[in-house]
Amino acid sequence: MDTKRESRLLYLTVGANDEDWGIVVTTVGFQSITHGVAYPPVQHPNTHLFTPEKGRIINEYQLVYIVKGSGWFSSQSLKKKLKVVAGTMILLFPNEWHSYAPDNETGWDEYWVGFRGEHIDNRVRKGFFSREEPLHNIGLSTSIVGLYDDIIRIAEKEKTGYQQMISSIVLSILGSVYYKSKNIQYADSYIVDKIREARDIMKNPDYFNISQMEIARKIGMGYTWYRKKFKEYTGVTPARYQIQQKLMKAKELLTTTGNNVSEIAFSLRFESVRQFSTFFKHYEDITPSEFRHRTH
Image (cartoon, rainbow, N blue to C red; front, side, top):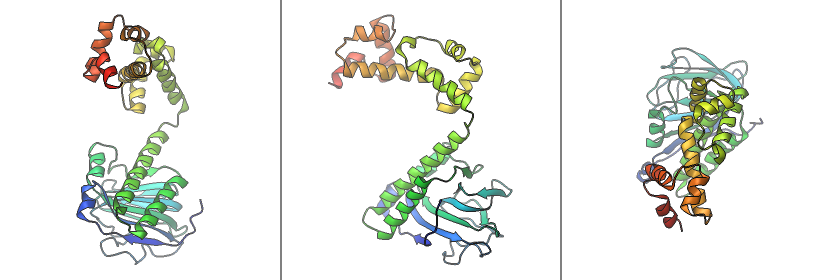
């Protein structure tokens, strides 16, 4: 990845309306540290300046993306130094001591963006990101580099509403980091292929009444292991996923066909219209007929 470009260091103002958006950006930039050069450069303000030996504590989150070179990282929660290579995204947490630096032999190129707000606080509170796992080896991504460049370009112009725009891009970067990190955990194509087989079965109306134990047998997995791996990968149990497929198909038929409710019920393998109506109302709080009336 070609990262030969000029350094950019921006520290941004934040207004009251910006805070109401739920996330604000405080700093963004790019810098290239050649081998043997002292780190970090002295252009940073005192609130963000530190020495690798002493480390620092900041009052915001930062996403630091290393796109060239290598180095190390340590934090209060890790209590040890970890190797950092090109393609690593470092997530810094507020009020958490940390330190990092490039190797003298290689230097590194880094992008960063600092931010704070309830949106990221909620994601951390819900366990999407953890202080105990601050390093995400997501690989080199031109699309993520492009998002950093977009933030820098928009922030430099400071047009009205720019905070809302760039903070939304930060959320896009966070989503990409989460997505890539989760999928790297499932490099085992066997498990992914088996889960795909199970989902294909559950999307087929001919199998809407099939049990999860029968699905596990069909794809050649033990039921307990299948259920565990399915939930780990998709975030929902296979039973819940099956219910969602049935509901989505029911809504599709109710809104895109002229079939009456009885015909739809039997096409979805319900034993009676009453059973279908009870099922639909349990999850949607309205009957199939009421749903159809509202969408027409």
